[in-house]
Image (tube, rainbow, N blue to C red; front, side, top):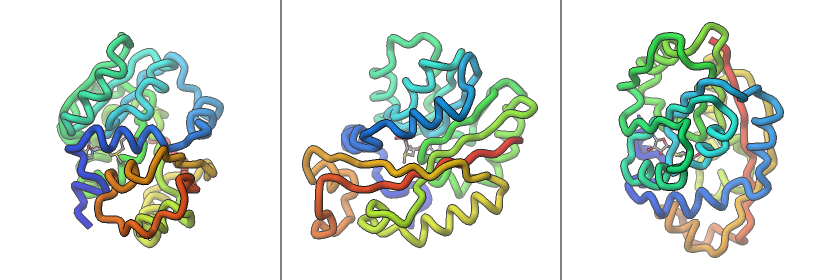
Length: 217
Ligand SMILES: C[S@@+](CC[C@H](N)C(=O)[O-])C[C@H]1O[C@@H](n2cnc3c(N)ncnc32)[C@H](O)[C@@H]1O
């Protein structure tokens, strides 16, 4: 599997955005994050923010949100969606070039993005440690595996492997949420996952288990 282009061709921003809007139909992830973590008035760094699945949610609570994304087409969509929010600073760059002041953020948030940065872990974790405040925390949203979504896109083993890796790195499992991907039609799915066998998808509702992990630094 290509570690740079994991699952999606991120250059196709619109295709990704259309699929992204179908994820977590019942907003269980937002509900969990806002009840479990105190994001109010905090400084948050969102890495690999994509087209903004979590950006407006985070910005609605925090004081200042730094959004880092390396794909121009995804960043354009994100910026357009959030152009009225004044507390977001958009940084179009590779996360490895992150240049924020030392100990300046309370949380680093990665929504389905840290896994696609796994070829950079060695340089990223010292960087994260540097920008996080003392007692700062990193929050991950990842696939939990053992569900219809991972089966359909053939990432069951890979998902288990990554989960073990995160636990080994000291991340704690906070929740597994039973969410739903609700598609308007099958094309939205097949456009996002071009390599997937078209016979795989049985319904427009896909069960998706979502894993929430965190780690204090
Ligand atoms: C699966 S997408 C998730 C996007 C978004 N957080 C969401 O939940 O919809 C992973 C994102 O990480 C971004 N990404 C991957 N490696 C990156 C890097 N080295 N620097 C910045 N962004 C990166 C990709 O461009 C992509 O937008």
